[in-house]
Image (tube, rainbow, N blue to C red; front, side, top):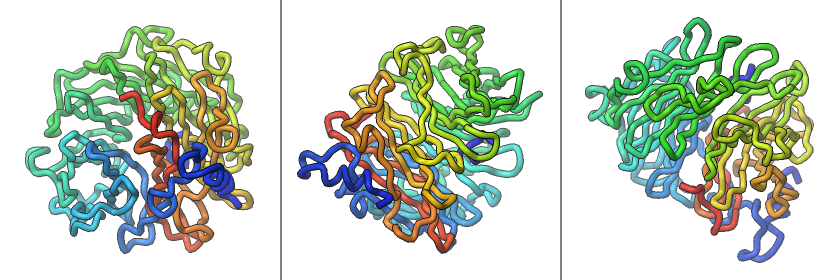
Length: 446
């Protein structure tokens, strides 16, 4: 219900922003004409008609990597900073790869859930496996196959839990987070070294399991704080659903400095009638936690965007929206089919950027949309139309049925959103769009 699967002149605002002035005075929120085809892309990765992009990340050299599912297996593309396929990467150097072409790829590794890049250019990819576990595979820097130096020569490891999120630490360790069935479904976090050997000094023998007494926990997002602490976010399945947040120390112990019970847990329905679930979270320069999610507005399929911020210890932040969560329908659109934010990131000037889906009038589909907020939670009128924008994520308009934004990177003078686009023919493909922002503020604080 509140897992990532649930959180599964129409472009006028982007177009209007593009016409706001000269190339040097474009209002933030316009499509970037130097990215892809006037700010948008579309990639048919394989011969399958169901190529669906999911996780977009940026590599250390500025290129982008995006993984997803093609047919019944994982696949990926490598892009230049300008949004074109990066030659020299992938199985035949075309910037594309179907993971089943890799020697030794596990046959039941089917649906990628996340990716994380190491400074040397290798990319770790998490995929669903058989029931109850996942694979974490390491790709070579050029994307030609699995890295034989990891996983005792296999190029992958098989955690005994469902992996949902991964991050690389400053010490080049891989933090892997997901879900495991204990007395109730719970969050689990493990740590591996750069060769995918489990670090048994972390938590209890290499991992920490932590859940909530009143419901199953479903993990959707993760961030690493500057001090090395690990924060995960998702949903807790009691009635109504609640947002669940857990913070661990850098060594994998529940953080006693977080949560009302000093046990590393935060849980709240925020007074909602039909429930709320968290999708992504990030730490700001002051150590506060900005998070986003979807709020149900009825008991069937209507919803709206939800943004809030906690102080470092997990208390309500009175400086954000008067101490209340910000709830809104993006661009005053319909609440049908539960539009929701997938992602949150911060500009270097502390402005908050939120990306997600917006209902397409007269259909069951979505546009991709972006909202930008000031530090105090107010909409930033210098972005798009009153702080919000929306449009088509791919170059395939007007033959689009729906966009499915699922990840975001702030980089190179813009907000880059990745995901999938489904056409009216029901074919899906990888799509990436870029909205321009002031170059001075186009980076996170890292």
